[in-house]
Length: 317
Image (cartoon, rainbow, N blue to C red; front, side):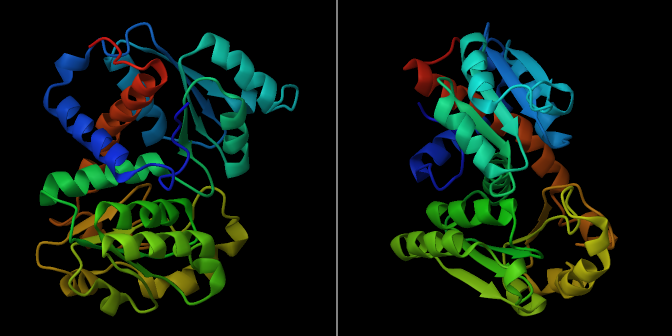
């Protein structure tokens, strides 16, 4: 059974197939209006969401499927009256595919162990593969390619988006730079960084960690940042984090150091004046809403890819 847990697990060919399918879906959505006919998607949410929930729910519905929203905060699973083993075993009898957005990555891995239907990682504290597949699709759509480009990520690099970028970029031919504080708690997981460097050695790409913003931006094709105050970060850490991360704010000066046709990305939610200035996120180089829209097309492609793998053939289209 194929799942989407992290992009370390997926080959460049599988990633490319999903990106190509997403492009077809975006160009000709009517062709796919029954591609998930009579298929049931169960969406398990432990962590709040806008883009993940709506893109999956709309995506399944637009393809003739039946999305079910399962809120852990009001469920037996969230109350501790059901365990993951029993929940996933039952859902495997009812549904065709599961998407889970959880705090702890270990819970997702446990779901995968017991599921007999595909499981999609809608986000965990370790990995956010759906987001980065959408990002790759957006970059390729705007730039016409992925190979040979350079993406620079700014901010707290010990997070799910950075890890997914590190898994995916070298695999798809992109150079990746990380601009972050020198403190260990703000740097990527060492095992993820090592895996990315092994892939880069094989593909002829570069993986770099830098601790100054403007040099990290120099000549980059994509400038990327993420929230400094994610849902799980305690409010009492706010001032310390702002002090540590302020030197890595994406400003007009940072954008000027990048390539003239560089694009700015933020996976959202975004706070103007924090991880980027308002003039950057609302400026002409910003593609954040293209990025958000493309989550819809990519989520559709992910679901179809996994359903086809599970059934050995294509869902009806």
